[in-house]
Amino acid sequence: KFQAGTWLADHQGGVAVAQGCQVYGARHCRPGRTDETQTGQTLLQTLLRLRQPLQESSVFAALDQAFPEGPDPRTSTRILGGLAKAQQLDMALLAFSWHDMNKHELNGYHFCSVIDACAKAGMWTDALQLLGDMERSRVEADTTTFGAAISACEKGGEWAQALQLLKMMTQSMV
Image 1: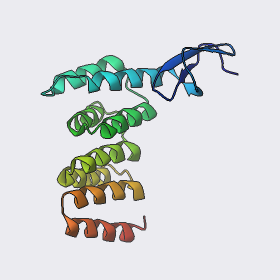
Image 2 (image 1 turned 90 degrees about the vertical axis):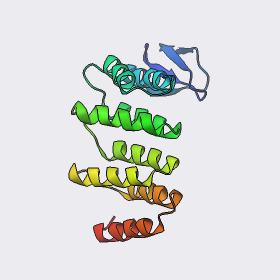
Image 3 (image 1 turned 45 degrees about the vertical axis):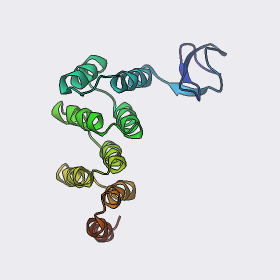
């Protein structure tokens, strides 16, 4: 039973609103949709539609408008992960820097999402820089984060760097 007004998502990315026990507008729904999540989905779609060449001001304006008080960490993860999945590295880096500039919480999931975008683009130097930024920010890297950075090195043909990261993982007991 869903509470009236609860946002629901279908497997095709559509959205519905529950009216008591009835669900209008979606099939195969799952509970748990919130207004913040809906805003995050809408923002992700907006960001993906921005014209090329990408303008920093356009990305920042879209983020500022969607989150005047700042996003919750889960929504940030969804946005950064969605940009990585869409292979939009430049946009993911801009969204990440917007979070950092505005002093919004950055956690391991956020770093990992952007490192994954770097891996998909084969940008191993950016991935390693983000891994270093994690350490300076006192955010602990996990096996997924190291794996994404290693993947970026592999795609860039930087096998020595990939082996160095494996060594760091072992030393860090990750």
